[in-house]
Length: 245
Image 1: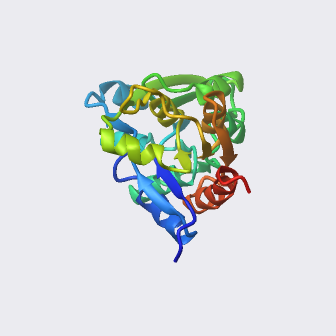
Image 2: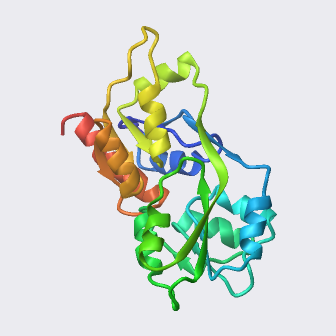
């Protein structure tokens, strides 16, 4: 198979393999350079307290939230669990916590709209969130009449990227992003001469990430769905842009 172009995969270590496989299946070369890592909090007392007070709705906006919910004992009885997208839903199902509401992976605002208004105004919703993360789902649910408690269960921080990995990523025709944090980490990279890497065609999963990438100067192709296969298909379109076709 002749590889048509190189695509940078920037997901946390160990979480980019399925996307890399989908890219190779499309005839592309996958260059895995993790730009961010996630750290689940060791203090689950705030989450246990929030869940223990009862909630009609428990919302997870990332697969990273799933281990925290499991460690805290799961959702309260009779609570609905909502997942931002298929990947988070699959992680919940694997942990024995099926989601009642599954978003399309495009972001928190879309998930809040899908959840809709509570049966009774003021019903409690507990949102498992990232430190410093975007608040679309929190604000969206509050605007719909939910009493929202946001509990930070993990943080996302930039990785240490080696000079060799910076060179490898800079040589990619296209870069893929699955979160605004990855976009920010790419923008912060510097080459051996201390220069920022040039924006290039990019593939994004979800409109929230796409907006962050556009704001940073990338020519973005938005994946049709929040799946690795859709990301790979979008990458083939982005490769065409990179090669001027």
